Every structure is written in structure tokens, then in C-alpha cells.
Image (tube, rainbow, N blue to C red; front, side, top):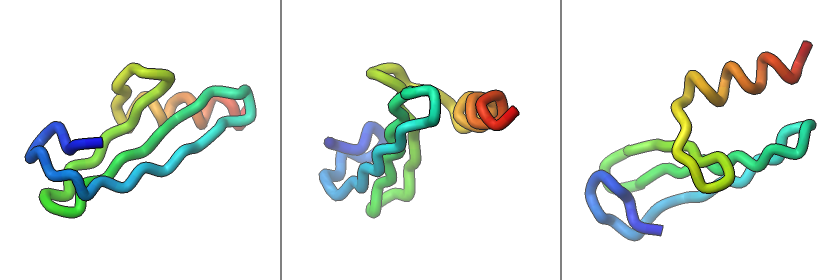
Length: 58
């Protein structure tokens, strides 16, 4: 995976599976510190990730 901000190839990927089965992947670039989330192929904001996690906690 290349960083969409700087093109670096040094990107960490952390896969998360929420209790409802939703797959969320977190990416972080070591070069420019860009961070982003992906939900089943779609980019999502941190706010969307937090809203989803809060909804599932209830």
C-alpha cells in the first residue's frame, strides 16, 4: 500500500473487526504521518469510525 499523501511505501496497516462483523482497516504512513481508515473498500473519516463504534457499544 502506498501513502496517498506522499507516495511512500512504508505504511502500517492494522485490521479491525467490529462486533457486528464490519471490517475496518487503519493505515498510517511513517514518512508523512498521514492516517486514514477504510471500511470494506471505502474511505471513512475518524468521526465515522467513532460513531460506528459508539453505536455498537449501546
